[in-house]
Length: 484
Image (cartoon, rainbow, N blue to C red):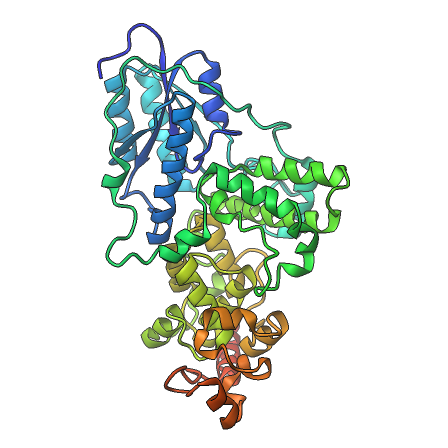
């Protein structure tokens, strides 16, 4: 493409904001009067490049966005390579006079964007950045002492009091000014983001609808019914009372401001109950809180915030980790969660806490190993949320659950999956067991096992450890860590 010399041209660099609605960077670029070219750059060597499940989602999200932009007369330019170099090359190729983007908050990304901005401005290219992904910037809300929040509840109160930084979503652009000549674009299929041999994403594809349309449908369906049962129902993996918006938020297919406003408007109109809505919005706030932590603690994915855990005596248990990853621990609620993750790319939040506790405290495998597995297998893998949540369970993060809070997988299963339906769905070899035994099949009499077609140690594994003994071992190591 030759340089555009007749009308100014602006690039909109899309990252984790793959949407048209409430996209400040996209809106302001169009408002400037320039010809606008949206671009997405796949930088596979950037810090924390997407894992396998996220790559599947990314393919379908970009496909959906490309189709929506095409309807608005805008092409989506795809390029692969180092982000800064690739963007600068595209600027030189098109003669773009400005670049617009929505801000990122992981410190490595912040520094990269600052460096790129300085370089572009020095070359005479305008750079415009916006908050398109948070309700409030990480520096907006501060404690009375002037620092950032390290405890969620006061952060949530402060966010409720302050409200979103923007009152209204950025208007949706209906039509774009299309350039007469277009730069070359990669074919999405050539990026090979989807698995082929084997295609392990078949069931993931049957469960999810990536893209902006799918995100808004998911929100409206949730607000139409499930939200009223959210306060208690969110802990029941056997029931469908969660929003499942997390992957859509991770890829920016819907903004938190849209979720906030749509929910608040329904509460104000008396359409939905305030209790379920407030609990739901507090989970959106946890995502915000996690991003704040990551912004202020760049080593959050790697190092414990509580330094007494820096030298914790973790175990190197390769076999235990593998059994956990593949849902073969012999504890049905743990195995159901890990198999749900593998089959659908997602896991119920209550079960995430249970499986994380089992890995960290029963097996004494470092939380970073679980975080890495989640990063590879979750379609909603989010750097801040993933790191903050794993540290929360491990007891070493901000506002963390105490290390001595060790979930009993049998008790948790019986409490939150009382009829065993969640376990039966994902641990199919136990499907015929009575509810009385489904969370502890080793307690079942031989006759009940035979009638259910269960042979422990053959069709389903015996527990790989004794939870009571594992709990005592974990508490002993924790006591030694506290003592220094």
